[in-house]
Length: 189
Image 1 (cartoon, rainbow, N blue to C red):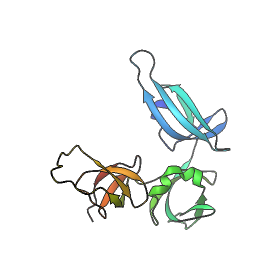
Image 2: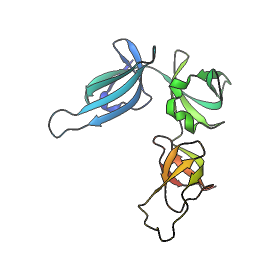
Image 3: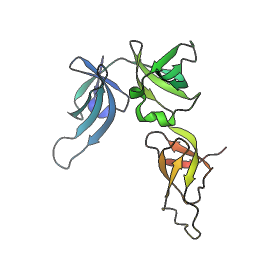
Image 4: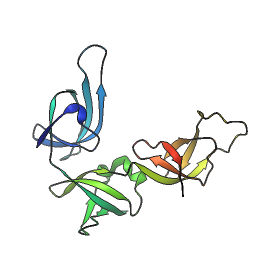
């Protein structure tokens, strides 16, 4: 176990609290005008999947569990879960849907991911920062609507809704940030 300060916790980190392992789902630092800055952390207990919220002073020490972050390649999804392969050893690992969570929408066959493994069990998954997807449907371009700050709703090929600039049309390939599903740029392919 390694002690780290609470303000450095990030999504996907594994921490030990009261002898139990938790995966960090969200971590936000709050700096109020008066008082001590705090870190609000939402976590999922690994043993039973119970979600808990914890609040620590930003300088407080937290036990970070030793996990191995290894590269894996996404193969396919079936009734058992999501299957990943270690490209060096060709070992396969099945990860349950709860661990993958809302990142499921961005998984693509052959995609390289980082799996956090603790005692042979995958606890968390980290996707690449950006993925390229196609716009399935969006509103048509309105002539004269050139304000660069205006965005219109669009549905991606994976079913996720996002906002895109007015010049983007259905069928266009775009780069999307996996963290929040926001538009980055038009794909350069």
